[in-house]
Image 1: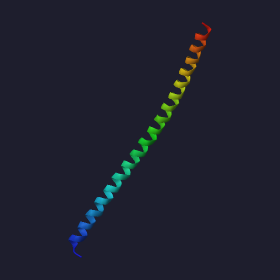
Image 2: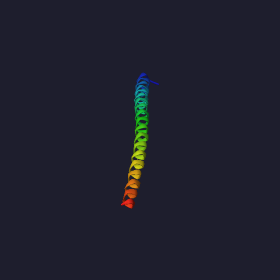
Image 3: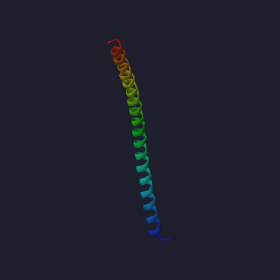
Length: 69
């Protein structure tokens, strides 16, 4: 095999290694982003449940006031 073949093969291997490194960094970024989004979703679900409970309690109080009038 010629030196040209090995040089081309070496260049292709270097490209693949760079691509793998780029994909690894992107994967790390996406995992971090996914984790942050899960935390945000959990927080929003908690707020939603708290708000629902407060609204339901207000509705019950309004109904009680309406019945007492």
